Length: 169
Image (cartoon, rainbow, N blue to C red; front, side, top):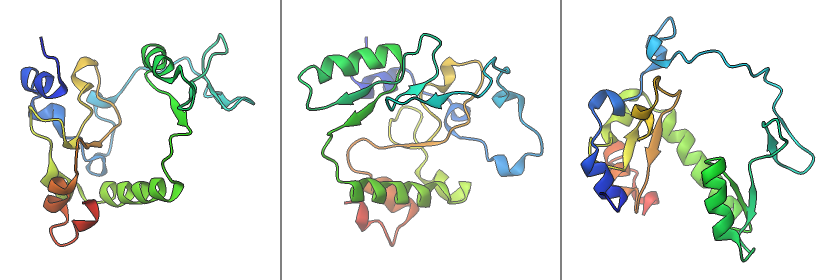
Protein backbone atom coordinates (compact mmCIF):
# COMPACT_ATOMS: atom_id res chain seq x y z
CA UNK A 1 0.00 0.00 0.00
CA UNK A 2 1.26 3.48 -0.91
CA UNK A 3 2.27 5.60 2.06
CA UNK A 4 3.22 8.83 0.28
CA UNK A 5 1.59 10.84 -2.47
CA UNK A 6 4.50 10.07 -4.78
CA UNK A 7 3.99 6.34 -4.22
CA UNK A 8 0.24 6.63 -4.74
CA UNK A 9 0.74 8.56 -7.97
CA UNK A 10 3.25 5.96 -9.16
CA UNK A 11 0.96 3.05 -8.21
CA UNK A 12 -2.17 4.64 -9.73
CA UNK A 13 -1.05 6.54 -12.84
CA UNK A 14 -3.59 8.50 -14.82
CA UNK A 15 -4.32 8.08 -18.50
CA UNK A 16 -3.79 11.08 -20.74
CA UNK A 17 -7.54 11.76 -21.02
CA UNK A 18 -7.65 11.99 -17.20
CA UNK A 19 -4.94 14.69 -17.21
CA UNK A 20 -5.76 17.13 -20.00
CA UNK A 21 -8.68 19.49 -19.38
CA UNK A 22 -10.91 20.22 -22.34
CA UNK A 23 -10.50 23.50 -24.17
CA UNK A 24 -14.09 24.66 -23.79
CA UNK A 25 -13.59 27.56 -26.18
CA UNK A 26 -13.70 25.04 -29.04
CA UNK A 27 -17.08 23.53 -28.09
CA UNK A 28 -20.50 24.76 -29.21
CA UNK A 29 -22.41 22.41 -26.86
CA UNK A 30 -21.67 20.87 -23.50
CA UNK A 31 -19.81 17.57 -23.92
CA UNK A 32 -21.51 14.60 -22.25
CA UNK A 33 -18.27 13.92 -20.36
CA UNK A 34 -18.90 17.10 -18.33
CA UNK A 35 -22.72 17.14 -18.13
CA UNK A 36 -23.63 16.42 -14.51
CA UNK A 37 -27.23 15.67 -13.53
CA UNK A 38 -29.31 18.62 -12.41
CA UNK A 39 -29.29 19.11 -8.66
CA UNK A 40 -32.28 19.87 -6.49
CA UNK A 41 -30.44 22.91 -5.25
CA UNK A 42 -32.34 26.14 -5.82
CA UNK A 43 -29.12 28.16 -5.69
CA UNK A 44 -30.09 29.82 -2.44
CA UNK A 45 -26.87 28.97 -0.59
CA UNK A 46 -25.74 31.98 1.33
CA UNK A 47 -23.12 33.25 3.71
CA UNK A 48 -24.60 33.23 7.19
CA UNK A 49 -24.20 35.94 9.80
CA UNK A 50 -21.47 33.92 11.53
CA UNK A 51 -19.32 33.97 8.37
CA UNK A 52 -19.96 30.36 7.35
CA UNK A 53 -21.04 29.15 3.97
CA UNK A 54 -24.36 27.54 4.83
CA UNK A 55 -25.46 24.90 2.35
CA UNK A 56 -26.57 22.10 4.62
CA UNK A 57 -30.13 21.62 5.82
CA UNK A 58 -29.00 21.11 9.42
CA UNK A 59 -27.43 24.59 9.41
CA UNK A 60 -23.84 23.39 9.59
CA UNK A 61 -21.26 25.23 7.58
CA UNK A 62 -17.77 24.97 6.18
CA UNK A 63 -15.59 25.39 9.26
CA UNK A 64 -13.41 28.40 9.90
CA UNK A 65 -10.39 27.12 11.82
CA UNK A 66 -8.15 29.35 13.92
CA UNK A 67 -4.57 28.13 13.74
CA UNK A 68 -3.97 29.66 17.18
CA UNK A 69 -6.46 27.19 18.64
CA UNK A 70 -4.64 24.28 20.35
CA UNK A 71 -7.18 21.88 18.78
CA UNK A 72 -6.60 23.18 15.24
CA UNK A 73 -5.06 19.92 13.97
CA UNK A 74 -8.03 17.88 15.18
CA UNK A 75 -10.47 20.44 13.73
CA UNK A 76 -8.72 20.26 10.36
CA UNK A 77 -9.03 16.46 10.35
CA UNK A 78 -12.72 16.63 11.17
CA UNK A 79 -13.31 19.34 8.56
CA UNK A 80 -11.61 17.21 5.92
CA UNK A 81 -13.74 14.19 6.83
CA UNK A 82 -17.05 16.06 6.86
CA UNK A 83 -16.59 18.80 4.29
CA UNK A 84 -13.40 18.24 2.36
CA UNK A 85 -12.76 21.95 2.85
CA UNK A 86 -12.14 24.54 5.53
CA UNK A 87 -11.08 28.15 5.87
CA UNK A 88 -8.06 29.13 7.97
CA UNK A 89 -7.58 32.27 10.00
CA UNK A 90 -4.48 33.43 11.87
CA UNK A 91 -2.32 31.57 9.34
CA UNK A 92 0.29 34.32 9.22
CA UNK A 93 0.42 34.61 5.43
CA UNK A 94 0.57 38.31 4.50
CA UNK A 95 -2.34 39.57 2.40
CA UNK A 96 -0.01 41.04 -0.24
CA UNK A 97 1.55 37.59 -0.78
CA UNK A 98 -1.91 36.00 -1.18
CA UNK A 99 -2.79 38.70 -3.72
CA UNK A 100 0.46 38.04 -5.65
CA UNK A 101 -0.33 34.32 -5.80
CA UNK A 102 -3.85 35.09 -7.06
CA UNK A 103 -2.42 37.36 -9.78
CA UNK A 104 0.02 34.65 -10.90
CA UNK A 105 -2.82 32.11 -10.98
CA UNK A 106 -4.86 34.48 -13.17
CA UNK A 107 -1.84 34.94 -15.44
CA UNK A 108 -1.37 31.17 -15.72
CA UNK A 109 -4.99 30.20 -16.32
CA UNK A 110 -5.56 32.97 -18.86
CA UNK A 111 -2.89 31.47 -21.13
CA UNK A 112 -3.99 29.54 -24.20
CA UNK A 113 -4.25 25.76 -23.65
CA UNK A 114 -1.21 25.16 -25.86
CA UNK A 115 0.95 27.18 -23.45
CA UNK A 116 -0.40 25.56 -20.28
CA UNK A 117 0.17 22.09 -21.76
CA UNK A 118 3.92 22.79 -21.77
CA UNK A 119 3.79 22.04 -18.03
CA UNK A 120 1.41 19.07 -18.30
CA UNK A 121 1.48 16.75 -15.29
CA UNK A 122 2.88 13.32 -16.10
CA UNK A 123 0.68 10.22 -15.72
CA UNK A 124 2.49 9.22 -12.52
CA UNK A 125 3.30 12.71 -11.35
CA UNK A 126 1.77 15.02 -8.85
CA UNK A 127 2.89 18.45 -10.05
CA UNK A 128 2.03 20.48 -13.09
CA UNK A 129 -1.00 21.41 -15.15
CA UNK A 130 -4.04 19.19 -15.56
CA UNK A 131 -7.29 17.93 -14.14
CA UNK A 132 -7.75 17.09 -10.48
CA UNK A 133 -6.17 13.73 -9.61
CA UNK A 134 -9.53 12.61 -8.18
CA UNK A 135 -11.34 13.06 -11.53
CA UNK A 136 -11.25 9.37 -12.52
CA UNK A 137 -13.24 8.44 -9.41
CA UNK A 138 -16.33 10.31 -10.60
CA UNK A 139 -18.76 9.40 -13.39
CA UNK A 140 -18.33 12.81 -15.04
CA UNK A 141 -15.44 15.25 -15.29
CA UNK A 142 -15.39 18.35 -13.16
CA UNK A 143 -15.44 21.85 -14.60
CA UNK A 144 -11.89 22.22 -13.47
CA UNK A 145 -8.38 22.78 -14.55
CA UNK A 146 -5.62 22.92 -12.03
CA UNK A 147 -1.97 23.42 -11.42
CA UNK A 148 -0.56 21.36 -8.58
CA UNK A 149 2.59 22.56 -6.87
CA UNK A 150 4.70 20.46 -4.53
CA UNK A 151 7.95 22.11 -3.62
CA UNK A 152 9.20 24.83 -5.94
CA UNK A 153 7.11 25.68 -9.02
CA UNK A 154 10.22 26.99 -10.84
CA UNK A 155 10.71 23.91 -13.08
CA UNK A 156 7.16 24.16 -14.43
CA UNK A 157 7.40 27.95 -14.66
CA UNK A 158 10.56 27.59 -16.80
CA UNK A 159 8.54 25.52 -19.29
CA UNK A 160 5.77 28.10 -19.57
CA UNK A 161 7.75 31.34 -19.18
CA UNK A 162 11.36 30.47 -20.15
CA UNK A 163 12.44 34.14 -19.94
CA UNK A 164 10.33 35.13 -16.93
CA UNK A 165 10.46 32.31 -14.39
CA UNK A 166 12.76 33.74 -11.70
CA UNK A 167 9.86 35.20 -9.68
CA UNK A 168 8.96 31.60 -8.80
CA UNK A 169 12.20 30.94 -6.91
